[in-house]
Image 1 (tube, helix red, strand yellow):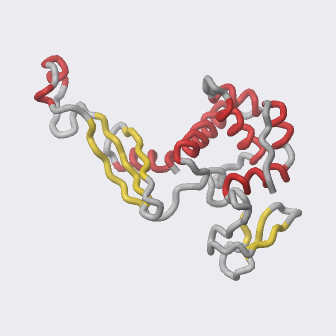
Image 2 (cartoon, rainbow, N blue to C red):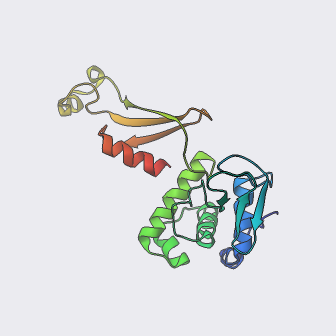
Image 3 (spheres, rainbow, N blue to C red):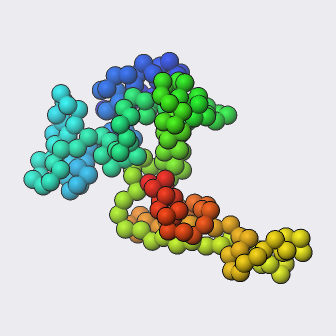
Amino acid sequence: MDAKVPTTLHEAVTYFSNPDNCIRTAIALRWPNGKVTCPTCGSTEVTLLATRRIWKCKTKHPKQQFSAKIGTIFEDSPIGLDKWFTAIWLISNCKNGVSSCEIARDLGVTQKTGWFMLHRVRKAMQAGTFEKVAGEFEVDESFIGGLARFMHKDKKAKITGTGGAGKAIVMGLLDRKTKKVRLRHVANTQRNKRKKSLRRTG
């Protein structure tokens, strides 16, 4: 089930308007070897329910049925794969970048939705996978910046606290299974702020 790669925006819109083409693209992105795998048990013994465009695992366990969205950045979004894949085409093919307003106009969605899609796709491309962050992770933050004693007196005068005062805060997320590390700049170390950053990372 090889997925076609559209060469123009018109081709992308036309190609991804077909749900079957979206399924082919989803398989190519998520299961490059062509073997659809159950996200719950990891079995490749699955059956495609063609009329509903979902799969059913032959192993008996909860959540036997699953779609191409499950376990990906598309899972918790009501946006259709036709719009997601067209957005991915836009973002990956615009050499000078694309704005959320452009995505909104081209896909017929709101600017807020365009912004949401843009950041999800960028993060997925940065991570090298469209799979959603899941599993066990280690999280910590670090303060990046020079020592106060080496700063110019004008900059030193602006520092009113100790420790991380005046430094950039970087949060690190280590996937214990894959050993991949994700980094994100955060405004502060408050717990609710870090939770928001984790949600955006996922």
